[in-house]
Image (cartoon, rainbow, N blue to C red; front, side, top):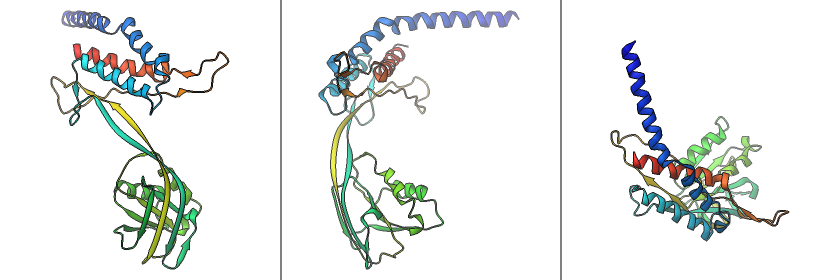
Length: 264
């Protein structure tokens, strides 16, 4: 019992000391400073693709720099930039063997504005048979990240349109997958697909704090720092979606935790 009592006393002292140290770093003043700036009118709702979201990224990166955190492997700064592509379908023309394919029976998962191919273009030909799970098989095909023409058995005529879910916004890629609803063998084909491409630049802000003991494990804290921007004025005339709770608060928590752990 005495050993147990001593153990709990030491545990309480350690926890009390830990809490006192935490209070010096995690406090209302510091939280209010960060969240107030990110959710201020100056940030105009932090909509992606605007100068304000870039300003927010610079602010977060500077906080990480001040805490002495490291940049992620392969990056020279705390900012990781990439381009997201949205495709709007314009038209599709496809002849498979001797059959003209209805436009609605062609779905291209791509980030290219124009695809114009024949059987000699180097695309791999794949078949999804009527005994397979359409969506699972389609996902496997897309994960292969190669140019492919996929012949989907007409058994899936009622489910074929579900493949459009894979046409979501995506990072620019060098491969395209074309799904065609047909029972033909596609010894010969001529396909032309046109899309309208809208590209938006994005930036992740990434910082690393190396662990003291186990360098093979990674703990990730994250939050999205963008919001909805400026919209239709409310009854009071306010048109800025400040996004304090969604998600300046979560971003603030991530920044505060970075500061806290960097000081332990």
